[in-house]
Image (cartoon, rainbow, N blue to C red; front, side, top):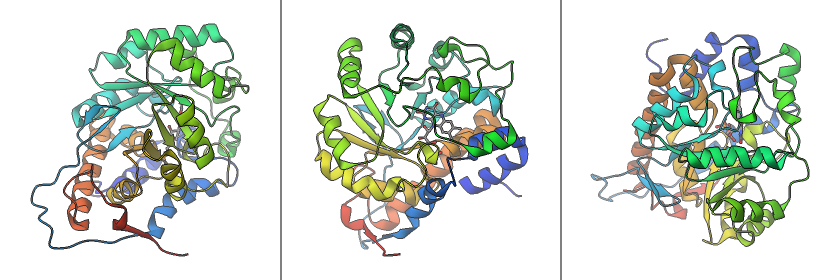
Length: 349
Ligand SMILES: Cc1cc2nc3c(=O)[nH]c(=O)nc-3n(C[C@H](O)[C@H](O)[C@H](O)COP(=O)(O)O)c2cc1C
C-alpha cells in the first residue's frame, strides 16, 4: 500500500500487523456482530444536502465540549490495553491527541497510569466502570481527579460484559507484562475484569457520583430517548450515544440511527456526543447535523496507534480533520458549531 489515505487504510494495515488474538479483541464485537457492522453502514443511509453559493473560504472544525475548546469535533473514546497495540500505549496516543488539540478519555482498564497520561499535558477525561467495591471506586476517582482529569465518563452499557466470540476462539489474553494499574491488578484477562464490575448500578449511583466528586459526569452508553431524559433529571453533564462499538448487546440499532431520538429528548438540556462507526469526516458532519456536539473514535485511534504509534494516531486525527473541513465546506457550512439539521436527510433502505 502507498501512504494510508484514510481510516480504512489504517484498518487494513493494523490487521496485517496484529496477531490474531489482539486483532480479534480490538476489531471484534458481540454475538453475530450485526451492530458492529451497522454502526459503520448506517452512516451511508444518511444523505447530505449541500447548500451552495455560501462563502466557505473561512471554515473552522473547532468547537467546545463541556466548555473545553477542541480544535476538531472528534475526541478519543476510552479503550482498554493500548500497550497491546504498541509498546508506547496510552501515553503515545495521549501525545497525539494533545498535538491535535482534542480530548482523550482514558479507560479504567488502561495499561498506563493516570499520571503517565497526565504528564503529556493532554486535555483528559477519566472513564469509569461501576466497580463492585466502592472503596476501589473512590481510590480510582480520587487518583484521577488529583491527576487533573476534568470529567468522569461513566460507562453505563456494561453491567455485565458482552459475549465476544472472537476472544473465545483465539483465547485472547493480555500478555503478562502488561499491567492495568487503575484496576489495582497486574495482568488481567478481559473476562477477569468483568468480575470487578457491578451489575446493580442504577440512576442513584449517577447522582451519588456527581455529589461525591464534584466533577462533571458524562454517561456513555445511552441509546434511547427515555434514558436520555433520565440522564437530564439525574444530573449528567453530557451523554454519549454509544453501544460500546457493538461489543455489548448485538442487534441494538446503529448509534447514528438513535441519535436524533436522544437529541430530541434532551432538548438542549445537556451536550450529546456520539461514538460507534465513525470512519470518515462525512460521518462526523452527519452526526453534527443530527445534533451531536462532537463524535468520539475508538478503533480508528487504535489502528493508528498499532500502525505507527504516536505518529500513526496523529495521522488518523489529521486525516479526519481534513475530511471534516472538506465536508463542512462542500455542504455549505463554515463551522462545526453550526451544521443545520437540513443538511442531512434519511434515505429509506
Ligand atoms: C478494544 C476496545 C476496548 C474498549 N474498551 C473500553 C473501555 O475500557 N471502556 C469503555 O467505556 N469503552 C470501551 N470501548 C468502547 C469505546 O469507548 C467506544 O465506545 C467504541 O470503540 C466506539 O466505536 P468505534 O470503535 O467504532 O469507534 C472499547 C472499544 C474497543 C474497540
